[in-house]
Image (cartoon, rainbow, N blue to C red; front, side):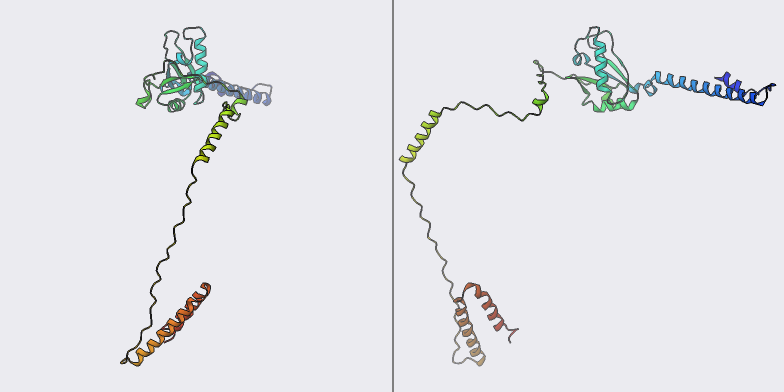
Amino acid sequence: VSFLNALAEQPLVPRPHGQRDMATRGFVRKGAAALAASRAAAVVAKAACARGGDSARSDCLIEVADAEQAVPGVGTSSWAGKVKMALQQTFKRFGPVLDVRVPADGNSPIVSIRFASARAAEAAMVAASQGFMAVGDSEVRVCQPVSPEAIWRTFPPPRRRPLGGEPKKKKLRPNERFAPPRAPAPEFVDEEELQREAEQRRQQQAQAPPPAAEQPPLQTLPPEPERPAPSEPGQDASDEDRSVAVGEAEVAKEMAALLERPFSKQKKALKALRLQWHPDKNP
């Protein structure tokens, strides 16, 4: 690249072919220099991609344990390829997976997964509930050795599994998944037994004495309150007392007549009576 750049900077030597030949040579030199620079940039980018970009850092790496439980058949020739495929399908939703390394020896190998960025590795650790990630019908343990979180640096202890193992769920067909629930099968009913029970109930009802009719309790009305009687003035009463006694007698007479009227008209008559004897309205 430096050679081509130096060649492009050299001055043009005029030839007897004229100015047109000189312009053509300058254009060719500049084009060759640009092509060489682009090729050099492509080589640098390819080397960066080969290193994995940010994946060269150790925080882009996570480790997986218990892969032999998720993918049975450890020790066989095809087991490593199956593990790589299963782990790539599981972890690619967090980010690009550059490499999955499976050790060739050991019954409990520790698989290394390298992402393209540290953010993808962190997303995978966040999605792993308590350090466990589901892979197929089983689960694996996940850790990030150089994580800033101390809890992510080591594998969690393995979980205890039942002796019999978890029963596998039956894979339903589409028509079975969306079908309405089936009604329970009807039990066998003996019609003769039902008839005998009904006959026994009728006989018991016929033999039982009829219940005594309950008499409704007598409704007791509250005692009628004592009605106020108008006062009678004495012999030594003043003229004001006598006028008050006359007014009380008139009010008592009108109240007695009001009670004899229909209930719908009593309220209107009472209102007129109050207005008539009100001290402010009729002094």
